[in-house]
Image (spheres, rainbow, N blue to C red):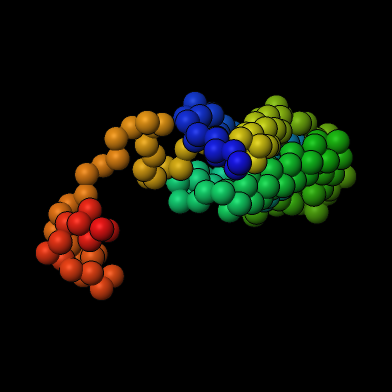
Length: 206
């Protein structure tokens, strides 16, 4: 005897996945548009100025993954089954890559000269040796946190997909009365099947 499929009634789980993807996207995007490292640079005309580079400038994958997470929320509505699980795997890989790349950049920051060159049009007067030390900001850790949240909810999506409701689908509770069929539509269906549309469905079965 074949076991009945599990009911797709975990609406709370679906809400957690959607909320986690949105939170992860917001964290990655916000981190990517904020300065990750700053450095004091002596210029030929303005003296010493603070130059900074954003996460998107140093690691474009951060904002790219943020866009992926937003697209995943939209795809979550249309997909189900294996396709939805594959979406979860793709999100987990992308968010995990963003976390790893960010941590690598935090562990090995750009050199002062590299950071100064990230600011277009900044004239250092040809004296890179006068550039100060690179200072890190807390913003990269927001990207790490956002990516970690996205990985967790992506794994939840893969594991719990069989319990998550399919948005837009019709589900009837066990023992619920089936919806009534439109008589005109039923007549056309019987005609297409080669039956007599003037005979009711129960009479045609006899």
